[in-house]
Each structure stands twice: as C-alpha cells, then as structure tokens.
Length: 67
Figure 1 (cartoon, rainbow, N blue to C red):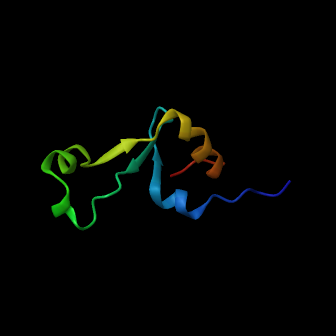
Figure 2 (cartoon, rainbow, N blue to C red):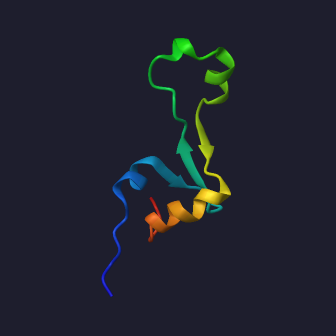
Figure 3 (tube, rainbow, N blue to C red):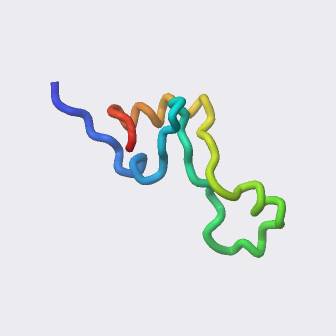
C-alpha cells in the first residue's frame, strides 16, 4: 500500500503536544485590531487547543504525526 501524504496546510498550522492534543494559532490577530476590544486581543494571545470534535479530523490529515 502506498504512503499517505500529509496535508501541507496541517503541517504549517498545527503541532501535537506530548499528550497527543493539537495546538493551533488563534485567528483574527493579524491586522485591523482596532476594531477588536482589549479583552478579545488579550484572550486570543498565544495558542489554543483544537476541540475534541475536530481533533480526529485533523489527525487524519496528518497520518504519521507532526514534528
């Protein structure tokens, strides 16, 4: 059976933690931040974990894991 390819967007956007959960960057933080209030900007700082409902889908797109 041939090797499966990892989706290139998943390689760029997600990392796997030591416990097997997925981390991703937060959307809406690049430009036009003046329309967001300070609480929104503060709470979306850094990275977040992918929800449990979406984790199986993203892991299927990376069949051999991520680095």
